[in-house]
Length: 260
Image (cartoon, rainbow, N blue to C red):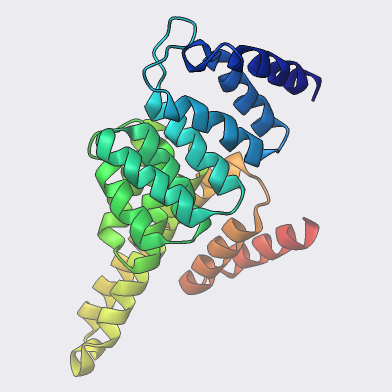
């Protein structure tokens, strides 16, 4: 608060000298400090001065409009004004169409709005060029899984694990993928009709299911190495062992759940 008051005094004094003498560095700092203190209305007021004076420099540095517009959108987001925040970013995208900074800020808004369709479209666009952000791929994997795009989910989680082999979300996602794969095999088998009674077909189906279950078990156990006792992962493993008919493992997990 003290820092902000001092900066505001500096701003008022410089304003007396005229527009060409505006201390944009003071406005920039005032905006950041107002934001840090939770006063987003003031933060917007000061960032607007930077946006309205693109020709002026900040301590001999370029007045970065890409950054200014993104920050303004973030302040609007923090105020809960999603529509205005998106409007600012859409306008900024016309000036900086390839800006990853602007697209990242849009992701925050779509996440807050639980707009999976917009998130998916934007992430598919971003992951074509940004190959090292594990969060992009894990979020994409989650959305694909939710929408039932299992093969796309696998590719997204696999890409995430290539970036970080110990990423919890990717490990859990891969486990869920193989459980879903096993369920698909079971559903297809049950829909065969009379041919489903064929012993060879049944044996092959069970074998394929177990292969996928074993892969799911591997990934869930890797996840539990990072987050021991996680109830969701333990429940997933319990369901797998119930399907496999492994009562010993089911009892072991039940005991762990009770203990935790």
